[in-house]
Image 1 (spheres, one colour):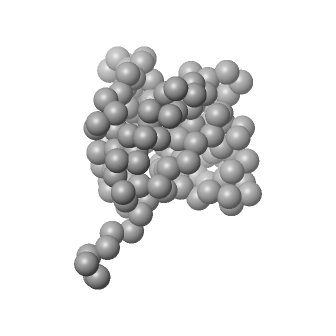
Image 2: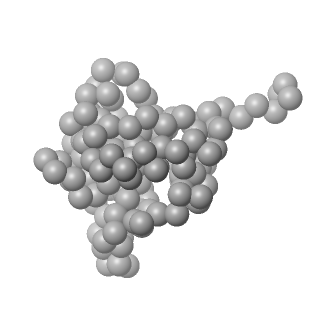
Length: 132
């Protein structure tokens, strides 16, 4: 219907585990308003952002990755000009204390692993709506 089209939202997924990345991309694809791309790690994601190759409305990143953790990625991102992009961490370490630490560190939200693929797109869409 004309006039009832919603703007699509771009999501950058940073996940070093190929299987989890594929599940997350498929889950995000369930919502036709979400366009998602993935990066294998923080360095690849930063390169995408620095070159303007992909300008996401939200970044969804794994916490524990080799080379650069999700928290390290947030530190670098916030120091650069992309500080406005909301970042949601995905982690199995999600006690109340852990989550409070992540939020103090600059994360805008947390999704616990293992995540439910059927609700991942809903959770991400809710984070995007809250950030707009």
